[in-house]
Length: 506
Image (tube, rainbow, N blue to C red):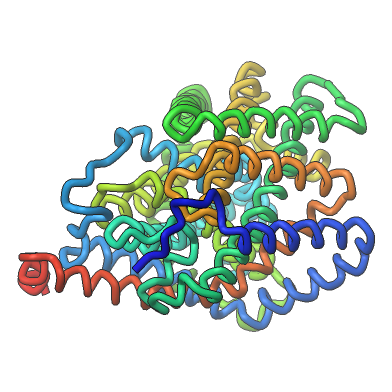
């Protein structure tokens, strides 16, 4: 039985321990930056090097597990009680979940990653750089990194959280995802440790993203308009972003987050259509169609490709890096998606968190990334950095496009920051609707940590640190994979008629 947390705004142990660890890490990065960098890089190299095979296997098993959950046996089970209804419209629901998980990353890497693979073909395909074949293979690997494997991590954890929270009344904490694994121990020390880990990982990941988005916005203003904000530019941008998403999260999910989620989806679709219609249309359609075919054909071997005999650290720098990055984001993304998915079926939730976002990523990368290949932004990447790639594709079309791109980067990020602040408040309180003051506190904390790290030059280090947290997360996900099917099996046995229906499909 769940503990009664309704009479207190937050769990003091989880709140103060996680906050203290965060402050200590920031102080470490300020006082002993070289020592921190060395330690973090050593941990990261060890986890992504010696354990690369397990990252790959874990992501592959999660994809398989998600397709099983969507099947006839478990798909019709409800994330809620019989009378529960969805809180949001289908469009707003998908806009919020897509925006919270993808953030500005898809805008940041959309034209950049295919261009990198175009210049340096992945070892799985090999071949000569900057050829038609290299372009096709570059797009296929971009699809792979932003496709089913990434979204399966979120989808699996979302169902593992939503089902016990909505059917058994568990508190809205990350630890509740492990109820079907360790039972009532989630209310004790083990549950608190899991929640503290989730808070720390979320703060690190989102603070880093805040800094990187600020860097991209600053670069866009300079690259496109020649506007240089000076030494304090990062602080100005971070301050504005923090003020906006803190206000939005203070007003509540139904108002702030929903409005931002709706708007950025409209802009996202509008930019995609504009580049498709006014760009090299036939080339983009052909490239996208071809890459989807190659992705489906090579999905299994690419998922298990460990690059045997290949010199260098390509796998750790790309595929394992991405899998670790998705895992480090998984706690807050899954809690947020679970929070907005009450009353929906397992099949509906998994499909909306796995299939639709994957298809959306394919369309975006195929068009925006394809334009980057066709317009060859590789020189821009070399001269101005990866953050300028998205603005480089706008120049051959129209300068107005850059304005909408800056807006999209901002709104996608705000959706993620909003969901992270809400999730952090849920981690430390266990409430489905945590207090607005607690939500605002974590919104301000995210911005403050980002500002401190930007000022100390520690953004890259904290990014590496947040990726390193994915090492324990990998084992937690494997526990969730076991636990959710155990829990759904119990639900089938307890639901009248459901067990018989499941046996009929076996």
